[in-house]
Length: 89
Image 1 (tube, rainbow, N blue to C red):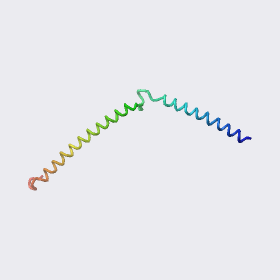
Image 2: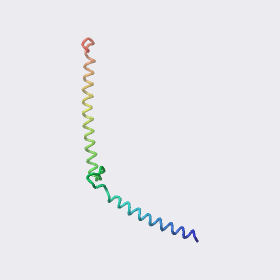
Image 3: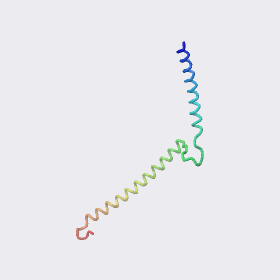
């Protein structure tokens, strides 16, 4: 008999706790950091996609700059190797 009361009590508690947890999750989502002083910013998918594209573009530009610098260094190295030993510094 007591086990039935225990089972029913636990079931009621589990149901109430699940409802409360769902309600709290909704409240937590609604309390997003909206302050301009907050270091965290909520982004939409479009804003995040645009941000990633901008970062990707800047990284590609940096890679292109480095590739040019590497090409210049290799050309300079080839020119030094092509010079006769007497003219090398």
